[in-house]
Figure 1: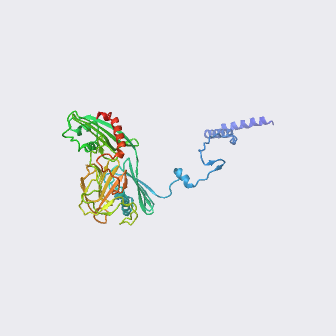
Figure 2: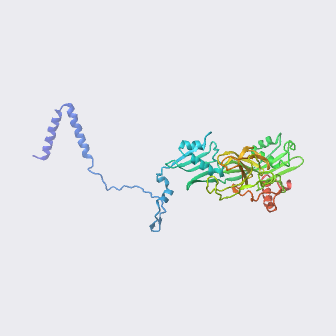
Figure 3: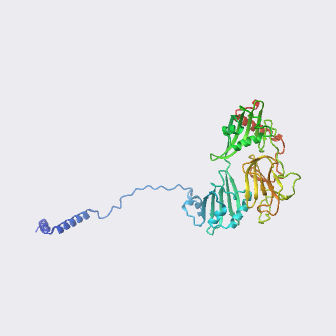
Length: 447
């Protein structure tokens, strides 16, 4: 029997069989046939010969030199690509923004750091006097080992100053980082209507800058009695900007006041003092000692390699100690502004005075402070009484003098002691004077 006839007979019998099935079974058979037909249409295997196109971008590497690769130690790679390597040291980084009432003691207690560590830090901070009075908004960053040993402490004091302490060979080494920033000059002028203070504030000067103006001319001019309505004032101020933001540190560079009868001038010199247009001094010169009368006996001189009498470690003695009894009057060695006054566990009661941009003086271990932060003082003014506070071996007065924030020997430093600009400095003074006048739209012949 032919094959085609056999197939026809098979399908005919199959259809007769399916037609006699119950309805449910009928649809189940139909579904099975459809499924088998679908499976038969799927290819038996994929075509692996089809090429796969994919772009591969390799990183640029400088690890090749000629035909040879440059081998680098793993720690060098980790330094450049530390994000690729997790820190397995177990050290903790703690970042804190100081709020009202926060102290370093409370922070250390909360983080489980020994109180003895704080004492070591305060000893290292005696040079800077910053840790005892943390202010709201300041940032504190700690690096702590797994056994709660403080490895480093960083305090962001302000936009300009960052103080860091690093543990090295069992003691903390301090470093004050100072951003130089940029000094820009601003010119203010106005007419007197009422008091000079109100008129100057209206022109844009701050209270501190107005104090500098009145302090510079106070021995030559009476602002309360000699000023009249219609008199004019011109002031040139240098302001410090750090990363484009005003740091609120400023200096009055030049002052010009015109009254009906006379013209008064004051120009800031490099020594932090004001002189008139002819270089004649407008304020008292510096004094060598912070005490009156016969120079007191020196009990411990300036010594950058001194062995500390309490800790027995090599620790610089950045000032001069005078053997005086408790209660001895302490005088300002020059005109200036009190920038810090308070208590420090190592330095005791202390006062820091800024004499212009160049000079700073400090007195420590006081029994009583007689001035406050922001106060303008004159040379010879009593600012404190000597004492025996802080870490001290006995009653004495510790006196420091800094030039551009670096401690120098106050007994030998070259101080501006004359009443006029020294001849060797007069050329530079005249150049700064003329430059200031140009910025104020004035010339020397107009004065």
